[in-house]
Length: 324
Image (cartoon, rainbow, N blue to C red; front, top):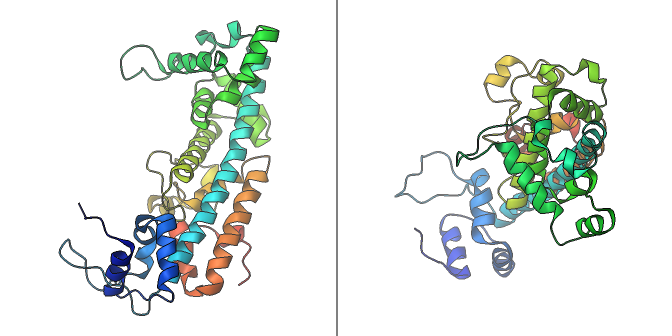
């Protein structure tokens, strides 16, 4: 474990490795605001000398004339991208919540005694403790939400004697929603998909269902990443991936060969393509606007980063509105 270093010691280490500071006091303020790990460890890779392999016993070296301002610009670029991912995935969460609320209320019922009955849903995987299934765990969560001592749950319990799905689901997380969607039986699942994608229910087949499921869990993965920190521009989700799809990938101009090389699986560019499927284009517009502003501000000062940023994120330039 590396020992604690003061701000002055942190700057001295970076200077010894070749990083140039235009204003040391300002650099120290930024490190105190956000932390060495968040700024330096998160974004130094662009500027490190790559001629020799760095081992545990060798010091990293920055490319000649690399500046702390450049690293901080990358950091701020990524923070803006992260904000746009949160905005976009919040919209997706709203679409999913509205569609599930509608379909469950219409086809199962708005009364708790009906929509909390596990027989209306698939069981899902068995719980890790061996007691019950995913549906039991989720229904237990829903009951806790219903009987929570907060509004509007308290109002509906007291004045109506029932908390309908469209109110109860306001208390769920995106993860709860994604799993609730996954546990819907086939016909209800198709109806949810049709509402969100804006397509006839009759054409929702297994391929579209699998693709949509992957899209929702990819959005959830990006939402979690954005909420808990970490680089966003080159993020790859390990668990939430888009399986190769004859619907998704040809439309994104991604061949099977390109897919096998890692394109169109879970990168930021894949999230862009995923949002094009939504009938409501607000989420896509939010992501486009935020990422475009982030890249434009950084590339105006450091245009040499253009190819590297786009290749790391796998964003198709057609999605971006850059001044260059």
